[in-house]
Image (cartoon, rainbow, N blue to C red; front, side, top):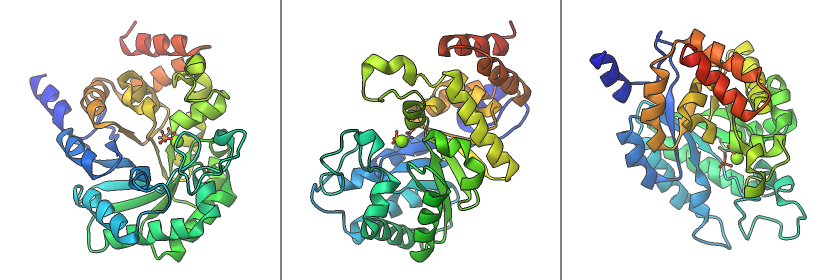
Length: 316
Ligand code: PEP
Ligand code: MG
């Protein structure tokens, strides 16, 4: 038992019966890398590149500046996976020179990939910088777009990646219910999916993630959210593709087990949560996780879902 505990505090993410669930870190830039490495992250599941754009409110960072920052993150995980998200501007992350100032509903306006498709030069520079940063490194670079709504979006992003000569896997974030409902169609254009459960909850429940008064509806245990996660994970499984979670949901150890039971293939979170998720996952088999997931989906509220999963996993 002591050996198991030691393994659980340092090794890769794995259930008690050996089902692998890579545990990856969410990072905002090179400054977050040491904590990710110290926590034993198996790579980066979400590199939020917005930070690079915050220094200057009028211009995008130069290609050279971007190459430098991306390279520092990529070098930290020589054999690992690094999933870079292209710029997600707008709504809760406005940028003066890119985000329209006159939108009545910024969360429903031009944000994420929509912004980049309106500013192809910004996307092209970012993709070119990523291609240069990865040159000569053995890292498994994956690049994904935020706020993909449908297959048309996914194709536009994949075309831009190819045009920039990027040798990487291209993926789509599932943050809009339409993307979860039509995950299989999106996978005709891109190779992997990553669920952004923060935005997916916001758009599923029409509940602004920045408004505390509606936080009950932002709870990632909401069974409707779990249903959408299951849809996306099942589509990915049918196409033999990966489908990770990189929203806050992955950082809740009990929910991480449920997500695993729903068929999610990797979990990405702030580095501080990795040890807890690793040790919780190591206690249960995949079959237990699947039973907990079914029990949670059968519930009628977030609180009931959490209690039902807890009851299954504690053997009640
Ligand atoms: C999400 O929406 O869940 C996500 C991971 O992206 P962000 O929180 O940066 O919008
Ligand atoms: Mg998001």
